[in-house]
Length: 388
Image 1 (tube, rainbow, N blue to C red):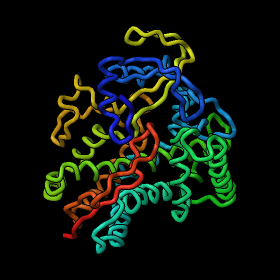
Image 2 (cartoon, one colour; image 1 turned 135 degrees about the vertical axis):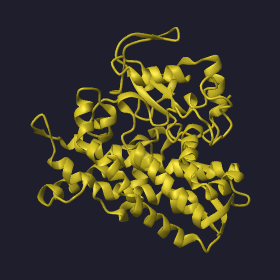
Image 3 (tube, rainbow, N blue to C red; image 1 turned 45 degrees about the vertical axis):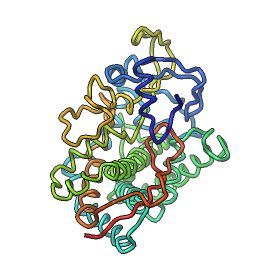
Image 4 (cartoon, helix red, strand yellow; image 1 turned 180 degrees about the vertical axis):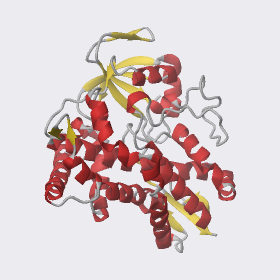
């Protein structure tokens, strides 16, 4: 059985049953190295994510050419706690709640552009511009550069071997992004504004300003985690509701259940399908001997279809009572931006169903996936719909 970007779930089911922890010598990681342990079952996935002393998050070597290697997501305590505290005030419930009217405005403006057409591409016309504009506002960068942001965020989540031009194109894209942000850092040092980049440029950890690579790491993390994954959540939601058309009208009549539907989409089609760890020491997992330095793929998408945790896991059920999915991670690295992603998806879906209905896939078309196993990433989702 082969892995399918559109439907990886049969593969997960087979592996979880037959080889829940298995070494794959030929697996090529998106950041370069070859060889990994795959971990598929919910309990094992939770264990690996919880035990940062055994399963470290510092799996990428910190190199100048790859600014993402210095991000908050690739650090362990105590450095992780110090970096996380610097941005935690940006993601308080009050700060996020205050963004609701603005996200509503963005969504309505986007629908204004397409509602009379009777068709659109959900990814291009709705799911991509909403999170890009939100992150641009938070960081303090121009939303006019959203094409660049989108290109960079997709590039970061693909293996160099998956990109036209290979590693050279991958590194060139990373450098373009680095230069873009470095010029902004210099501007904000001279003229600070009320945005996250200005806050980070002025911030100190143990009496020292953040290095350029630390600053780049933050920007890359927010660009990818706050952009690409939320795009995936919104587009996957619409695809899932097309597959279950009765849910569309139900949510229009019961908008109070949209948050429950979002949680089930997060379980059913996790925006991030796996995360990486590296063994900080020799350890046994389900009888397998993992050596210090071995890389690990922790399959969130598989854990969220584990039938021992989620009965009838391949059935989409917005009234499911077990909401313990792993879509946003677990432990100290639980996604800081999870409340913001939930809010963006909630607002987008509520506005969409207030104004449009009867979504279907455009005739003779299928969703086109981005070629990566790391995320559940729909590149094109052409649909038809009717105005209310």
